[in-house]
Length: 149
Ligand code: DAT
Ligand code: MG
Image (cartoon, rainbow, N blue to C red; front, side, top):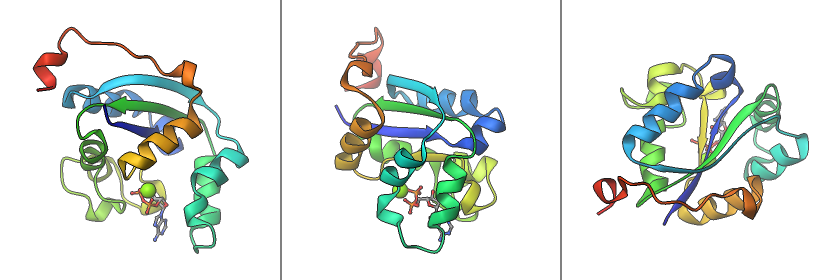
């Protein structure tokens, strides 16, 4: 089953949007397999965003993600990566489609509320970066056959 790492970033936590964001993913039919509320270390932030090192927004991005706790989660399901990216919307809230999290709650790219893995490979890599294997819960929902064909 495809996995994706989802973060409710510090602005989402401070604005009390954790429940709203989880609710949207639950209603979509995705299955939660791991979650923790945590303060992100400088080291984890730098590893997670290593691909953006050197870009003009990098320092601000690291400061943002470490500025308050985040809600880190792993969700799984068929096409979980694409489904969650779609639910979150485009990186810039002003380019995100109406009905997406970033559109409905955001204004600026530097306060875009969530992270979601961008490929299935990164879903696996980011899951391994943020969670220990024993923190992942393998389970079946009674309603899985009504969400997953
Ligand atoms: P996404 O979070 O949609 O996967 P990304 O991986 O390209 O986007 O960038 C990671 C984060 O960095 C993004 O959520 C917000 C910030 N960011 C990206 N591009 C930016 C830009 N041009 N100016 C400011 N912040 C930016
Ligand atoms: Mg990204």
